Image (cartoon, rainbow, N blue to C red; front, top):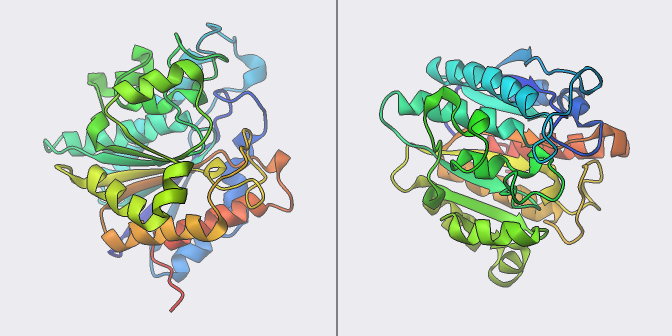
Length: 304
């Protein structure tokens, strides 16, 4: 990957998840020496701290089918503005979550920066879950199950219309990889969205390398490049126990690294976020340490 400045921005949002603790994810990743390790690859790393997030204890829940919607929208709008400015400054945005709701802000910011020059972005979304519920379909009302739908223009206007335009990414330029836990009504939304979804069965039958090559092609076609959104629950919980919604049968340690190495090799990644690290549920910070390793692989660390 081409050398450039990296701007790290934390988004300690836990309002979109059903279990507490994911707001400490950015700290856990920093504790795993993320900044120093990226610097060792030759990057100039600037840590911009965290965006402000309202505390759950002092916030009204709001609508039951989209809990904490107004607070999440406020945080994502702030995050989007910060990310847009990072891209404008020709730096690489690396966002640390927080629950996966933060992707609404990250993607909006990257998309807006390229939209200003009439360019589009694609997206590779690696996750155990489809994250394509809407308030009408969600069984829980937790917004961390909705961000991918919002990014392609399906969801509450407070989230889809940041910067007053939508969708931020066309469904045909989105590759969703590693899913193995999809809600019933959500399946129809995935099928009709234009998003290309690769389940764990697809990975088992076709191999990760083949899937990644196709995903990169999908996310790159007609775009300036793509955003990578990596949910740590994509990895099997034996390797990444510190996540709020673990699902057995995920990517192995080496598959996760191969995915990141393949993305690095293509030189088309514009931005990245790593989300859903929950230290409260972790063992000796294992999940954050793995997350840091995966970021390193995505940014150019090689075996030889």
